[in-house]
Length: 399
Ligand code: AMP
Ligand code: MG
Image (tube, rainbow, N blue to C red; front, side, top):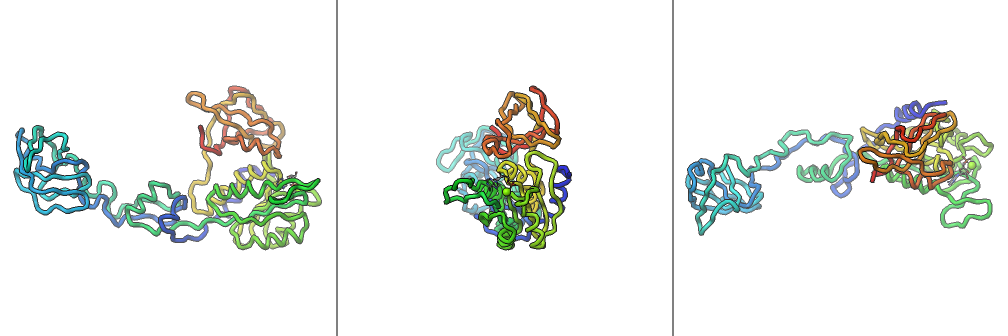
């Protein structure tokens, strides 16, 4: 049986970035940059004042006190009307261009102004309170590399540089199919013998959280032709995900259906708990995943295998969730040979985090996942004793 790392390597070797598209500034947040951004602008474009005050020649303030004549007034958005000579000063406001001839600004709190004269009592250094041209960005600076998610600062920088519309990677479209004779989809009250369809909706949310676009293919019974038909519906997507029907029972038909639709299956069964039966393949250029049916198994296998693949297809360089080491607040046991991905809450404890199981860890206990801040990675046949440290994959923003 494959290890999680071997399976992930197989998947990532086939998860190649999709095409690119140009989007405007409103559509840019959260997208992944697909081009290097090289500045065509100098920011700031000219030396400007960082204070409201008076622009002066620093040399004029060497012998203080001194009184200068105020010959001009420049506000942000206007230009100086003249060059400034010795003995002269200019009223200036934050963000206004510094006139030629002066080399320092004195904040207005530090001077005594009267009529068109200003009295200065303290010497200033050249450059004081002036933001030089190009202080932030120079023409030709490579300010952003492809493969990076566009957050608030990046989008602000793109706007500053006039670099919108911007080239980003296309978001993966992900078709989701739930299989099982027992499933009643949303909108139908489960009849006796039926259970509500969970996986479509948790998986759709995981797809959205990974920055991709879910397409709901609904629910199909465990019949080969029915599953094949729905797989066909999913062919407009970049990725196909099904849940359930990938185990060894007579009604586990997903792998056969995928193969009959032309998919080449590259792996089946990974040594992990929850979620041993998982299949992965390719169908033309699409990735196809058959995830296990139990709701926690479906979510955990999505987390470990599908999410990194979607991020890689979306052009991200780093597809890994952060991991920390936390201290077990109670024993954390993983009986059985397969590596465990156990759901834990994390609580801050001084400089470190304490981890505690979210209760019963059955693969059908969705609430173990609801409460989870992370997945504790525990080797097979191991008990992490209280106080020992354990590796945890962070799923949520920590409190
Ligand atoms: P299977 O892999 O088909 O044997 O399914 C494993 C378990 O997951 C069974 O108990 C199914 O009833 C359950 N299951 C399968 N699909 C879903 C779903 N979409 N929502 C909730 N439970 C499911
Ligand atoms: Mg089934």
